[in-house]
Image (cartoon, rainbow, N blue to C red):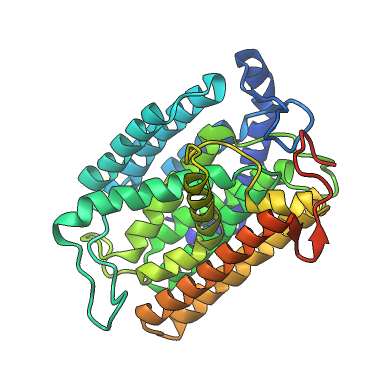
Length: 365
């Protein structure tokens, strides 16, 4: 790890990711890796799915170049490659949930077996006593990782949104990795952030982008969810080769609050309606913004700000040394308020003081 090279390695990583996103477009077109407009989409033109491939190649190159290949990095690359490949197949031919989950479980098992990392306790979650997981450690670890992977995949429904959510979570973790002296994790997270920034240059609604030029695809969103999941787990628990945890488990929940809340409310609503819980529809939080007449750019900025506010609350709880059970109950309170407000939103067809302009849409207005 050469932190003296930080000033030029991170910009180079961003430029490499952006360049690969563009260079891979002809290949994506030939392979049919494009996202077509549809009933549940908010874009109106075919868009190449090169983001995931560009990020995988970029991260594999810069991680091999800059980082020591310890067991965590090795397992992350092996598991990430599996996740990417199943996502790539899904981008091409729409897999059912079963094969996706199977490969995700295998990738998570690689992380646990090869890197010796997992959730061993939830800290003092409900009371001042530490909540040990014991024999439930392995299944709860896999369940938590799958939750992060698929929540991140579901939040990827609008230009710039998934990338910004990733940056908020990764930068929060990088802060605590640096404070804890876990330099390998810090460097890894900074490289991930730089690569993501390069992708956002072509995906987010910056002045030079009338709309996203490239998308992540399921291959990219699941890969990034996998990276976030295992960095959360590794930094939120003690590891034999990295020392004490960098933050308490509840801090990870706050850093990932927007996808977590959105997905949980979606699953609850779908179960009550008798719908498949992992089906696609237009009832995510960003859809409420768009139906109420906000533009894609306004929605992207609003949700990024929300992620920053909620992540900032988690950072404040951690830095202040607040008990985990206090952080937990405050988050539960926020979740209840959010769930009730979204229930009311869909019932009344009204959001943030605006009546819905339309109920269903094929493309952004």
